[in-house]
Amino acid sequence: MCDGSLPFSVSESKMEQMTFHFDTVLSDVHMHFHSAQHLMTRLNQVGQPVFMSRFQILSDGDAKPEPGADVGEAEGGACGGPQGPEEPVLDEDGDLEITRRPQEPSADDGGRQLVCPVILTQSHSALEPEEEDEEEEPSPTDKHIIRIEHTMATTLEDVGKQVWRGALLLADFILSQPIMFRAATVLDMGAGTGLTSIVMATTAKTVYCTDVGEDLLSMCRKNVSLNQHLMEGGEVKVRHLDWLQQSLVTDADLEFSWTEDEVADLHDNTSFIIAADVCYDDDLTDGFFRTLYKLCSSFTHTCIIYISIEKRMNFTLRHMDVSCDAYNHFRHCLSGLQELEDQRCSFTVEQISANFTQFFIYERIEHLELWRVTASPLTSEKELLTHSALSDHKSTVSNTNQDDE
Image (cartoon, rainbow, N blue to C red; front, side, top):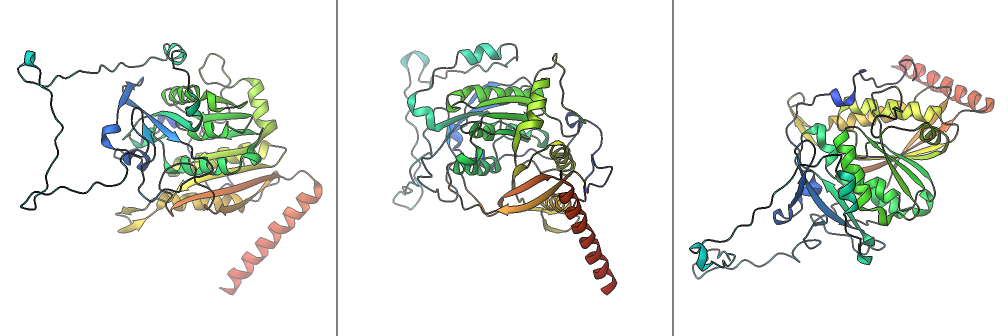
């Protein structure tokens, strides 16, 4: 850490102990599915309904969907839903005619339609390895399909169990730059359902897929298992990473803990860090940037960080206007990171144009952004002197401006 010089601060309590007082939220990704495709597959360990969706990877971005296109395919449904809107049928008076589903009454039940109930069972972590072994073998046509288990309409503290547009934007970027990430060691911070980690593993060597919460990490591990056939030589390791803790958990008795070899590999070989839509709460954003700084300042090599974010507009009583407080705080932290005067590493920040190929079907709105942060260690005496001179110059310019005012 940097002894309080960072422009962001967090409490020492763990992320799991934080309480959010917000209403239930639903990702736009899941909102665009047809209601008939919202089929539950099971209940998770905390009793939440779990859904299965399929996300098709388009070949070289075959088609860029129109805004509002369906995002993918729910298990058992057709990708993209109905082909175009149907013309409404009107009767002779101009009223809308509703085509009702034909019923097939049975003579044995007095004409009532037969209902076949589906019994959902709650999963248990001890049974999950057996369930994974029972998954059917993927067919050759599945090589362009990513299957993701997720929940819908969660509280803010459980939004990591949903798929968000920021994850699809970052996944698009990864697929558009396969050579850049080839054979790399990558850390995915706040991985959620694991979609970006799975996509990254199609080209990278090792991906540390990290988040907090046993139930979320179990879901993430299940998704990695479902898509193992897509990872040609790549490996995804699902691990616990709490941004508000001072160190990585290496207790062998705890699930999703790190081994000493993995910690060494993380610090010695990580060349990329990715994070998809993780800055939606100021305290978590502070924790994210503190963890980012702590990791990068311990590296002896340059590391590039890619962060996707959606600029969400909300009406606030404090401003009595539409604002985007979470995004503004994210930008403040980015600026603070770049202006940080430190003797161990320097940071440069730039926004990446989102004009790269779109491989997934979703609405790439203008408020979706991708940022690149380059963390470079200051190891040589020349670099330290240059960095010190630049810092002195910034200070001089700042003082001159204040005198002019």
